[in-house]
Length: 492
Image (tube, rainbow, N blue to C red; front, side, top):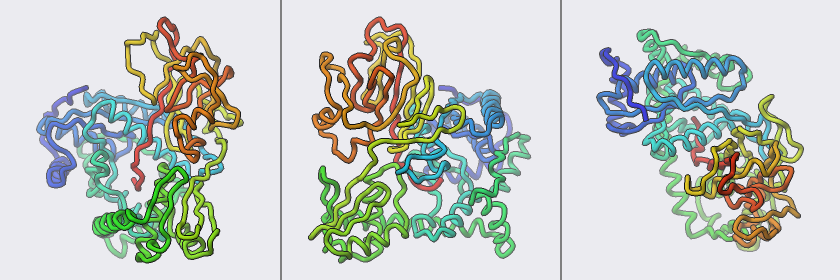
């Protein structure tokens, strides 16, 4: 915990505007502990500075978080150094993380690198927020980001959900106090305060759609309507309310129609087809997303063929979409996950080693598990004492002297066996272990299995191997942690 140093300057116009917005909307309340995501760019620097201005009067305790993907070499390192110096100058505790995200996902994972990096970022922030008992996690998105997001989804032909843009608050955890403030106002604030900031060179690349919207489309639209940023933000606010209402209607309608079992999800076909098409699309999207929690729900071009081919098709008609098999039965339509038997992941640059069947897990490191969106952290711990800390099911404390590195993470394979801790060294097939704990078949291939040359070390989130867990007197401890994904899945 680090209390913010008080500033002697008079509060700025931007700080007063943020304070009014926060008070009116309840984004921030006096006495809260805030975790602020700081990249070093203009928006996050302004955000941190403004909150620092408000901290004394609002009795805020601030922490900063910086995530380094190491993708831009020296530039990424300089970003980290800049943020460290900024936080030191402001007297704010900084928590830095390095993370490796595969540039290319598995054959079943068609998400872009930017999407996977974003998932990793939200996951790290969520976990750090829990550790710090933060009341809010604060992000620096501003009004131009909102306008660019709405235009990006508009160009893709998105529905109400996409056009609703970036929400100012999600899950009562992530907040965006600058969302109603234009980029020009933020830059003016930085110049007036003589605050330096970093510029990400990748933001100028025309390879990314958002950059082309920012540098080409939005300036052209401003010539027709100078207030286009404010107009798009207002549109997003209106559509967000409409989207929330339709989402509630869809959940109410699907209640009596959907039955969940170990065999997947069964949907009453007659009742489903009696609903308005807009609710049909929403219900199907919700179900597909729930079967793969790390994914955004599929778009219209995916949903429409399922409705036509399966729900309105003949008995036995079936399609597989994003790892989910959708099949028309006599009176129902069944949705079942159809995951691959193993994962193949491409390396993410020099920091990651390519593994033929899975992903290498260096020690120490933080890697992204593509099938579920979880992160796996491997680190060295102190000498192990059983009473020193409680080990949760998402942690494994191992004896590093009993195994060799490098480690590998992959999905289970037929024939895999290990010695579950607590069973006196008895060997058990992994398939039988999954049956014993009643893990559904469709979920088994998603479980990360951490291995060394000596065998399975940890069935992540479930059980360590008897041969490798740390005991009293263990001198070198390997601590593995499985960080669960946040359900934050919208744009932003």
